[in-house]
Length: 119
Image (cartoon, rainbow, N blue to C red; front, side, top):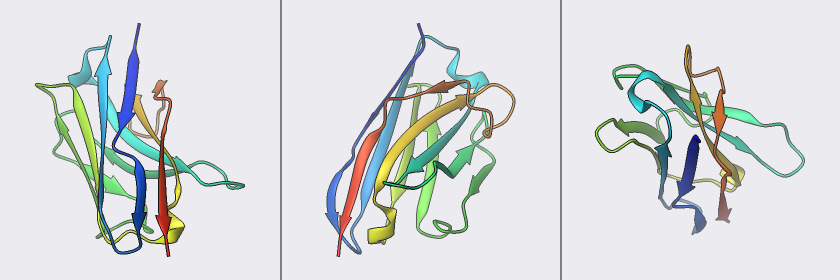
């Protein structure tokens, strides 16, 4: 059974930082592209960042470019999202996903972790 378990969410003031982690199990982690998506209240789910199988290629939404960094540790089956200079508009539930062919392919999802940025 595949599981993606996110952690690290919480409440932070604008300008602060948080580091999200996603622990994967039940799959061959190193052959999956990984991504973070988010969904704010009343809004559609949106792509935030993606990383290739080996970690050498990353991609970001324009809204987070330069502030967020995605990384992975294939030895530990972990993917991280370092979020700096947080803004109130970053408030959302953040989801970790795994895709076999691209990071825009969401074969598996985590349950999500809440990030709230206060102004």
